[in-house]
Picture 1 (tube, helix red, strand yellow):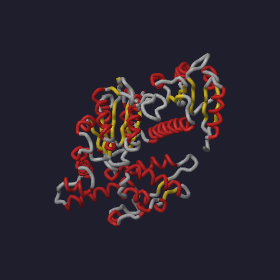
Picture 2 (tube, rainbow, N blue to C red):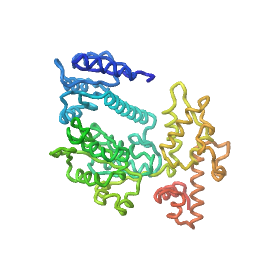
Picture 3 (cartoon, rainbow, N blue to C red):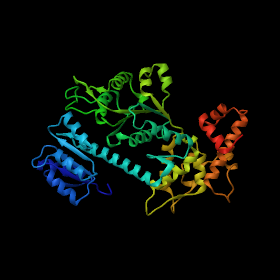
Length: 454
């Protein structure tokens, strides 16, 4: 770790403080110690910490009192609570008070490190969102989403309509189109923004663990259940739960998810009682769910429950006008103050002519690579991945001449000519032309109007 991150450990047991200090120091962290809540608050007056680990049961000032006071003093570092006497109720209470997470003692080294890495990732995302708002302002962005595309602008309007509703929302789109960004925008725009945004990829967790992750479990529910565990639904109580790749959810869990959505309550694995929750669910998939419903792979009743309000994200190839905007943003993200990088017009043209099967994620990866290999602060075509370097001759013929280096005019010229050719080939049939251009019919209508094509 190049820049050491600073952690404050608050615990009345000296052995616990020493153990954590040694363990975290070996992981590259800089560690300060405090024996109770009062000492912790004093330490906060002289230092800014990246993370705080705080025991709950302590003399003088306990962990809950410290948590409340630290948040009153606007401490922004994630506070992770610890306790040997923990229960699900205690953990939920701490998280409602504002702690980032809760961990039960005794714990393994990996548990602490994983929690810290999760907190680090969350802080990174918060920083990126903040930087995004600074770089792009006004109508070209909405809560972290950058676009001047008319379809995306309409999606911004759709988000505003549902931001404070508990309505289940289904975000559809190809992989890499920014479905999680939309879910975050929905959360950040409304009254739930002060509560948790919890995301889970339903296809990334083994089936035998997924139920416990979603709903939690009680101690002894299965072999490795050594203590009670809060599920993601409880973590997201009064906030938003984002179920990414919902189409990968096993059928057995689809039934249980449907019940939670219908009843508004969950039951932990092995538990005897249900618990009411207030969670807004945003789900997403790149799969064709109607086809999955027809084949029996996905439950029809769950599909209708999730799809009360749907948002269809266009692929990047339908948002060519956004490529320069996104590319410049990613260049700024991967540049430094000492090494500002710019991109040559020809390299930008190559980006705009590429098909982007991986969408925005592929674009960011290409820009990051280009920034690394660039020389003298300039991204040239040689810096781009091989798949992007070769520019089709049809596109070359429609480029403005060397005396006109405007990216916007080059972009307009390409789009206008392709739309014109597609309409000629289809005898003016806009539906067929849209399929040929691999864009939606609605997007084609927008562009025909914008370019004044007869």
